[in-house]
Image (cartoon, rainbow, N blue to C red; front, side, top):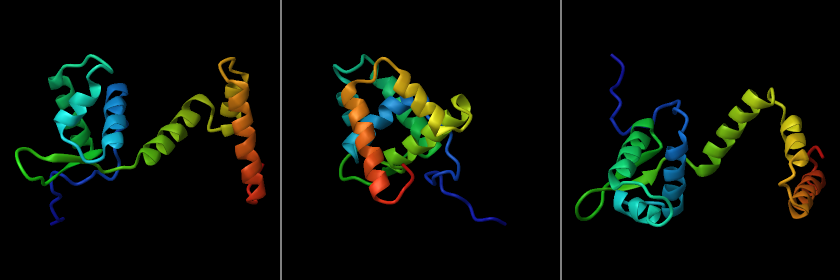
Length: 140
């Protein structure tokens, strides 16, 4: 018989984050270990959401394996992110590249460079990053 997984175990493959789930995760990553009350307070003035909505989203994030409860002194428990923001960003970007740009980073970058919203400062920064990568021996 296979070993039983605890309810707080992180699934091997996480379901993708919805828009509101991502907003809540951004707050959780910013706060680090936090209570649901901390997350609710962080949304105060930022976006009008009911406390119950945020708690429901946190419960879904826990079920999906993005946060887990950790013991705390006092009532309730603290939530801790189980996955780094960079990991989610990397996975989301790969998914976006695959679905919108046939897996081609070149097409995505070309799209961004054609975007009128890209400032000269943005273009300079992109050039600086490409130059740095070239100096390190990576592809230009």
